[in-house]
Length: 398
Image (cartoon, rainbow, N blue to C red):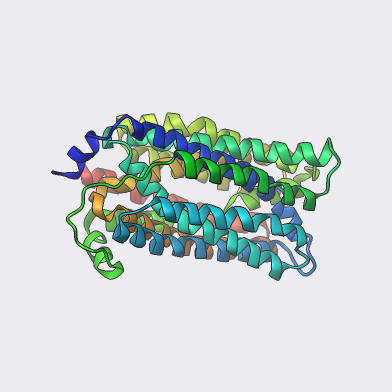
């Protein structure tokens, strides 16, 4: 029986799996964004820190996270079990983040950030594989969009909670870091009680890293990953959008709200982009996401440290992130059979993560030594090349 036939026979409980995993991500993101909405300014103000240090910390942490995704993806394919790795990853992250409350220097911040991202790396590939195995191909775009929407609803509530605790209840930033443990614990309970194991059909072969990569790293998937890698070489993360807003005149109390705006735009675009990708093709919608990021870089290049441009950048960045993270993840299973999905997701995240390290390190250095316009020009060039590459990829497949 083929994987597609097997998936069409998915029981009704599989839709509940999408919602359960979505609510796990919701509460985890409340916890995470309570911390991350405050973290860029917190790290920059640590002794011996700066925008370059912020870029290095984010780049190292995210690249290690993405490296872990190939390992966990292969293990989940080999074991044919996703849930235990998903739980382990969420547990590590939710335990690590509150320890930012006792951080006194950039090295401690790096250690905690890396630990948090290791947890994310362990859970992400098995979780995405479990999501893809809980729904058929025709509805995969909207399924990933639904999951992403619940995830980002938590990402909206997290910064707002942080602002409430800081400026209404009068708590310190470090106290907010400790309180992030509460929603993280709720996420783990939902995962234990409501998420069900699911795996696609398999031939019975044991999956090994090199063998699995040799099976999938060819043809259209190879070209697709190459284009995604080029884009990721210039794709800086949200921290620099918040840093630009801070330099444009946003007060510390406004930064979490601006971050919530990024996540609101992300949330509003996730399901529509997933539905649109199911109808017109995920590759075409991915080009739209790349275009939104290009608009961010153009705005930063033309008007850095402008108050209103900083607001526009936040909205555009959220839209880009919502499209690319929804559609990119839903696109991967189209080019690989079910038994290799964990490995394929791991390889996808590995390539993106390595490029992410370069992107944030280079972008942060250019920002600190040559200014935000120079950094924006770097990302603008790579985004333009990626849009052209993906356009030719679509024409070639047509």
